[in-house]
Image 1: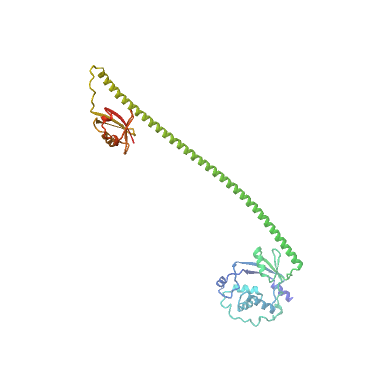
Image 2: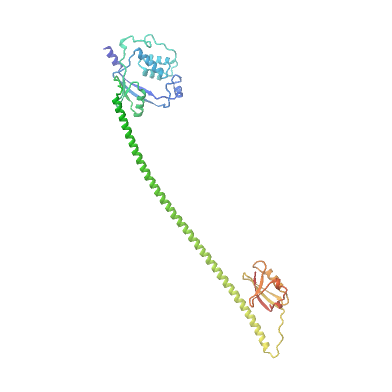
Length: 384
């Protein structure tokens, strides 16, 4: 009955906090003590697991007490700190002692030398049989999914809790038996089948993605081809428009040039007609003056002219008119035209229209107007 009462007293719910390891620097800052080197690693987060004690507890045998002390020291806690924690928690186990250390990590005397009191010496048997605790848990069971873990598989327990998010776990006296060869083979076959299924699903998904990428590639290629064709069509239209405009400009330029040539032709014809009328008028006047003289019985002597009238037509359509003495040399005519001309400078020649005869300053400059037959008037054209 005493053992039963002890078991009933030990049955209770407790919360156990598993801390994922922190960095050594952060652990020293939070605990302000170099003995907290157990909290090392790269994941500062924590998670809490709820344990319900069922038909199990720990024993306060000398071997268990020493095992708890060794467990705490292996976790990085100092010997004095571990002994003090076990004593303060009544030697109820390494987990309870570790919780006490986390709660009293800032105590100034936590690492002072510690000797176990006479009533409970580490490594000695319990004095009172009534304080003997129930036997130790053999396994840990996840209450949410029913998966069983060995009591010493803390790493596997933490991995399962982190992966699934389960937090409700219970200790059990039932020891997790090792798998037999048949069970191991079945587990391996199950894992292989699961891996094969995942591989097949992954390959199927990859094929689907490849088909989707091929569809997208074809759609993109089609859009690119259409865009390229549209660009080529617009470019052809633009080039055709430019070519058409160039042709229109060329036709307009030719039409303007043709109109200008026609105007020049009309102007030259008008000038020629005017020169002809002028010569015809001069000839008619001469004939009219000679006719009475010929009809007279006594023919008078031929009229002597003292000056001559000269009109020079320039290439730009203007005319220079001046009177010279019949005995003046032609050089005076060339000098006067060179001074008055408006079509530019440079050497030139003068020629009569009918009869056609050309005069040059070098060859004919010394001749007089009378010797050249340019009396009493003459119309000449300047040519370069």
